Image 1: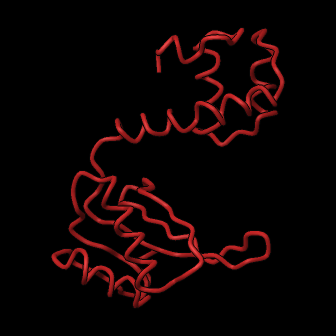
Image 2: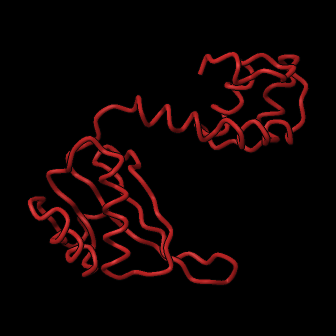
Length: 163
């Protein structure tokens, strides 16, 4: 992210801004932690400034990292968990490859075939190829969506394999 026009108007150099955003996203540090890490180096800025940098530059950094990430694994592990957002039950769909690299996530209110198909379409859209094997729990939505969208991919639902 060496585009100097991207950082025009900031009093800090591009290296400081990009390092702060990298620290936040790579190590999941809080904005206050990053502020404390910068203070001994003579970089005095508030946590709110760091938050604004992360909000502005985080998505473009993420896109660049995904682009340069390289090839994903051949086995994808799929799972869904229940989460509450403002007291309303939602489902967080998540896909990870065999190396533990997160492929994608999606939050939805439903847990049916239509929701699984949307998740599969989103997964496959951002990838260069298809996996050789999908590993999931026994949720029927996965099987139905896989059968319709990617029938050639092997699907395993053996107990304890999707840990």
